[in-house]
Length: 579
Ligand SMILES: Cc1ncc(C[n+]2csc(CCOP(=O)(O)OP(=O)(O)O)c2C)c(N)n1
Ligand SMILES: [Mg+2]
Image (cartoon, rainbow, N blue to C red; front, side):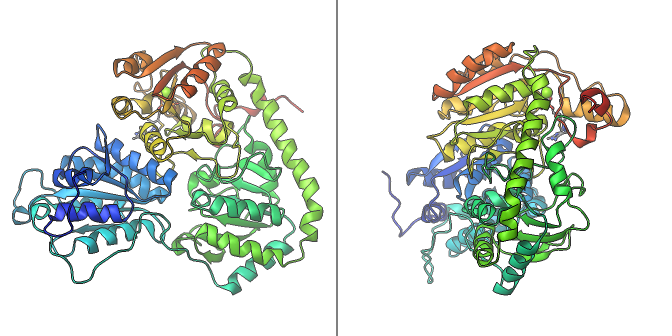
């Protein structure tokens, strides 16, 4: 291998060595900044070449979510940099650590309308924790390390490092202060609250009449799901998750109540589990920004309930709910809380457990019977509930399911049931931008190549990312893509109908054969039009160990049971039998 010597090297080569020191194995890039990518490839860092920066950023996001590593994406200045804004904005809102290496114009040409010059600092400031420009050849490691620390410490998020093209070619001077630390994994620091606060929280939970946990995306961070499972069992606590928290608990555990967010209309699990939360007198929030979708517009937590909030970001605690403040990373804080609770008298909790478990089991049973009516009815075009049923029977606890925004996200969080603590369901709920399902899945698959990754995408969203089918084929990334081909911008059409009684002319597409698009890129594909064909298609695709696409002609009038439709598109008197 073409090894770079540590002496007499360029800034670009020194950057590559710093990446290596942080354990970076993959850079999502398209050749640029060329000097950096050449240097990285020369020392064995793999370039996964995206077709479009927007997608490359989302691949890095998926890779970071799945691997526990800080992901690296690279891009050119100007137009390429602008295309990195959407995925960095998602990572920013979803708290995912991504380091973006962005080429900048040569230093002497700054601010004189050089080709593709743009104010990159202003461009990235709203969607990154840190935006810095490397300016001298003797500070390379300082700047690379600062970017990793910004991304992976505290509340994780994107960090942008601007790299002037002329600087990259300069000789790097050996700094007087050497660096040897490796910051490639997140969270970089483990932090927890004071003993007094942990004791106070343990007291509250042990004495509560009806406590409950709501676990958000922070509960899927490294080690947190296992710590949450321990607390759930030890303190006999029912656990709900938000959309982003799905997977943090085993949804077959008798105290797991599934996802509760805006999915609580007729036909949802939330319609039945919500009553349990309505009765809660103490709510423990874990790693949640208490956002609109996670809380059904802040209507889920009873106003009378005491709230305890674990979060890595002190500013998220108290944003919407005044709370006992447990500032710390989810895993550390949950472990501390669990040990403190173990020392309490938990007999009351234990006595309630049997009844609580039977209420939760009854809610799941009612949900099964409610959704069974459409799910099992062999309808064509195929109901998404049926597609999820078939997918469920092909899942193992090691399968990762990734969704695009819109209904795809809602079908996977609302219809699939997690099979173990820490199973991964990845959704772009930071900003819920269309098109990120496929690249998130590509990143997730690269992080865990041994296990299946399924991307569920709507036809509208998938049109943003078709081009990356070629990336999957070229780079041998064996993601299985399920396209929910309903011919409409489903959510858009339904939300307009619910709010305005009509919808605009954008909502219906011409027919598209996604199977043929995939095949044109060399990706194996099949079109499925009847429910009976799903099992064979999924079985074939999931065992093929190569990229596969299943184009499913799905029902255009199906919508997930969002609270928005309760009483509008969904008339309870029409969809629920009278009792
Ligand atoms: C980048 C972006 N543009 C627009 C939207 C607004 N939007 C949300 S859902 C949706 C419709 C998506 O249609 P499709 O991907 O086909 O999924 P479906 O709802 O039909 O399952 C639109 C336009 C968005 N969330 N993100
Ligand atoms: Mg659609």
